[in-house]
Amino acid sequence: MIGFVRGKVHAYGMDYVLIDVNGIGYRINFYHPEALSIGKEMTIYTYQNVREDEISLFGFLSLAEYDLFIKLISVKGLGPKIASNILSRSSVESIVTAIETGDIAFIKRMPGIGNKTASQIILDLKGKLVEGEDVQSNETLNDVSEALKQLGYKSAEIRPVMKKLEKEEGSTDELVRKALAMLIK
Image 1 (cartoon, one colour):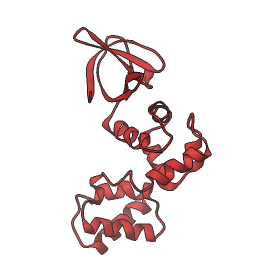
Image 2: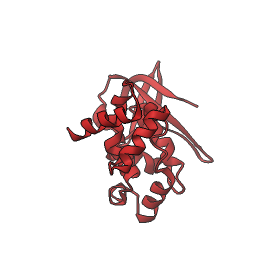
Image 3: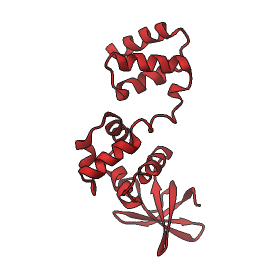
Image 4: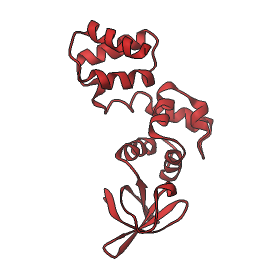
């Protein structure tokens, strides 16, 4: 599998880029033409899709985009083209927040997504998108996060505060007080 391609932009269109890597041109499905300019050296993280009739590459600007793409294509009925289109329309943070908060209306605004698919995305991915982060790596931070949820704060509000608290030490009560002080600001 090809994990990333680093080279110069040879040509591009609205949904692809040709990257010249030492004289070999890779055509990558890429939905961020605003990030491209001819002759610019860049690294594109890639997913290699193999089907019976085609082998194709899908490209992403960051590993966060790539990781979300992998999770999106695991949803029943969601292929790589639609997943790439979703990522081209909004930021990773916005998509994760919409999924975690169950915002079906936001997800339905994405191209190729109807009510049924939006519901399936939320059903399959809610609660699975923030697990990989180090934010909740220890029991105390887990307890703080749960306490904030019990107080009515949403995951999207809690995540940035938890990142700041990772470097802090103290009991659960002390960290909850610090988190509330940050949230109130």
